[in-house]
Structures are given as C-alpha cells and as structure tokens.
Image 1 (cartoon, rainbow, N blue to C red):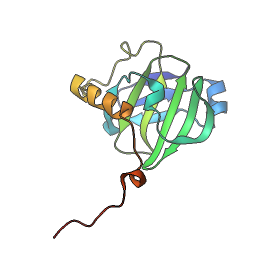
Image 2 (image 1 turned 60 degrees about the horizontal axis):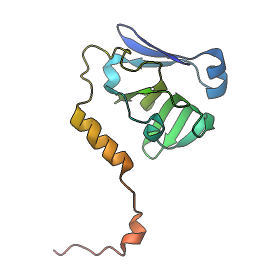
Image 3 (image 1 turned 45 degrees about the vertical axis):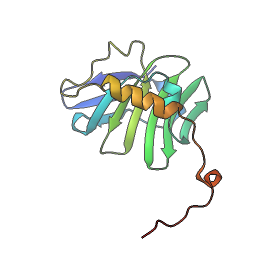
Length: 146
C-alpha cells in the first residue's frame, strides 16, 4: 500500500516498487501550498473520477495510476474495501489525489488546513449519490424570453 508522508513543505505519496510498475508513475509530490482540502470519503470508489489513463484498473479491487476526466487529471491508489484520504489541489498536474490508508483518521492533515465540515461532506455525499439525468432526455431547450 502506498504511504502518505507529510513533510514541512510538501506531502509525498511514496509508492512501493510494484505500485510504480502498475501505475507507470513515480512518487507523487504535492506542495502543501497547493492543497485546498483533505477529507475522508465515505466510499473511495465513489470518489474516483473519470477513466483510467495509465495504470491498473480492476473495479472493486484496485485503481492505481493517473485518471483523466472532463476538467483535468487525478491520481489514485485505491485498493479493495480499504478507507482512503482524498486530497484536493488547486495547482499542479493533479486536481485531486485519492490514496488508500490503513487508518485515515490517524493520517495527520497539514496543520494549517481545516478538514471539510460535516455540511460539506453531507453535500458531497448527496451529490455523488444523486441520480444523473442526461440533458437530452429533458427535452429541447428554449431560448429565454428577453
């Protein structure tokens, strides 16, 4: 399992040699100034975005590597039914990093970042579980009256 090491200036996701091979990626370095929020999602598999770009993806078992979605890139190292930590970033190559850890509550977030509030977590959970309806099924859109 990958290890999340938090230093004084950056957080580093240290991958094991097998994870290097499976993800086609080196260790991931995240400057602390780029981190917006650190949270623990209810289900790591629901927090994954987009599709696998490089790496390994076996649904329900492992997702490790770079993931591509509509607005950018993410990195994931998620295994089986293990809890994970979600790190959201505002600059850099990745928009978010999702990593399985043995005990997410024991993983210390950077001291100057507040964890997500319970209201934010509830909203995000609802947004993930809310059914998506394609816009094509909603009928034609009309121009607004001027």
